[in-house]
Length: 101
Length: 101
Image (cartoon, rainbow over all chains, first blue to last red; front, side, top):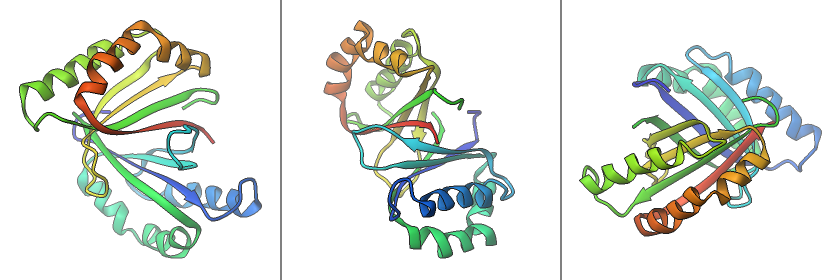
């Protein structure tokens, strides 16, 4: 990652049972909604597989700078997604933000 | 990340005060020791900047497959690093492993 850029990640668990259509739909919708918000780069939907923590999924994306990240956070699509989907379907999560050291 | 690959990450805090030579040396040594272990790809030393968790740094690397990851884990350089440096200088950490979903 280049200097000045920011990688935003979140690891999370869903209230949906593994393998259900509800789980699949949440993951698909998360990708389709978030990945096209302006400023989002290198969007990835990931499966968390380490037995050393209790999270099941991960989202990772990069922004060119803090301003782009802030615009994403306040973008109507993101705000709506958080209110209508994230808060209703995610049972726990941890946010992690990286910059180059 | 391509299917089948694995991204290994760890977020952590050091016992060293911020900005000290000891902190700098640990970070530099971690990079120089771990990044050259066979199988390690896309090695990154990162600064964790989200106020929503209490970790200060991150390491991220990718492996072509589970076998490469296992070889890394058991490689003498890694085993020695964990015993001689990690366990003595890291106060808390969280490991996260990702695969494509």
